[in-house]
Image (spheres, rainbow, N blue to C red):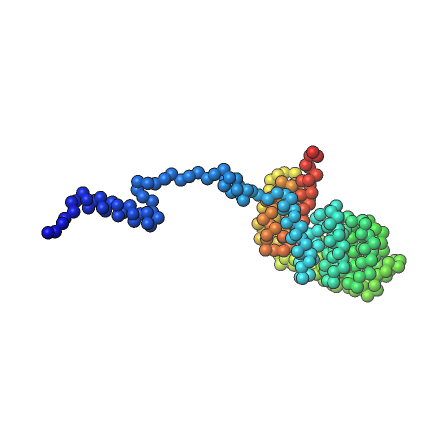
Length: 307
């Protein structure tokens, strides 16, 4: 005798089978869906802390680490860029100490950059070091030291400039005669200025890369000059433009000029917008931004009320 299950029983059995399959497969059941639970207050605060932007102090610390990495790099070009960046941190003893250490670097380009930086830092206490650098065996270092002495209003600078002009020493300034002979040739002076960016020949203030691009009819030196002039513009629109250029322009010369202008403007409110540059793939931009953030951070600390 064949047993046949009633239709109602078949439906019940099929429903039970589907519910079991849904549970086994981890799928939501049609009659047992639950409303999503709201995240706890603790998890919300943890998530907010994760996405909270770093403090100015944190960015300053990161900036110093980046600069020190550049200053201790095995590549002379990176040490040179890091030393140049220190020129933005006027009045900072650590910047002066690092620059003095760079004056003993084995590479003359780094020593020349350090001499120029001491002048830009207005580090009058380092005058003996700069006077000693006049006798450096590399003429580019001597010229950079001379320019720094001129900035610091040391009379020795005039003696050296006289020697360069007349091809002889005005007094016993300690210059190496072979350097004076080399400086008699305008082509060699120009070549030295281009290679070192030492601020001696008229165009050397913009550095070799800027001059090279200018000779290729590139507009970047003009744009870089415009960026530096905007440092004097009190309009917030100009500051916003400088920040945009500093973080996004395609030309490294223009980006550095914009950073210089922002450092001069001394507005700490732009620190967080510049922070992205601390991870830039261009070392010159990283170092220049790090120095700018340190300088702006010191401005921020001075503005904070004394408790």
